[in-house]
Image (spheres, rainbow, N blue to C red):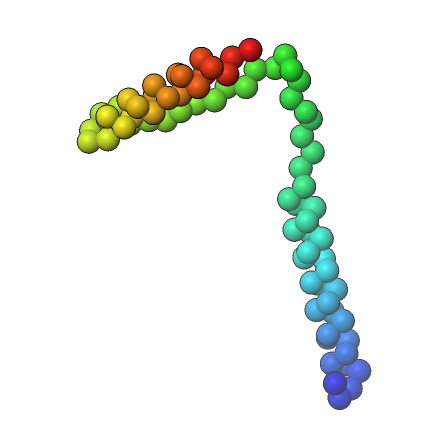
Amino acid sequence: MKNGKDFKTYNQYKYYELVLVLMLVLGCVQHKPPVSETQKVKIGVLVPSTGKFSTSGIAMKNAAKLALKHNTI
């Protein structure tokens, strides 16, 4: 660095870098209230029911039904 102007520009970049990192960190943090035990959560399954992958879709649908049957409280 030859003069004070280069030092000032370097500090400005460091400041902008810090602000950008803080914005990214604060933007990624979300406060979500915990799910109560009485609240139900719906889960959907999208499977192919027609076409050349319909046999795999039927197996996926049956697997989802079986998982639901075994995991109910």
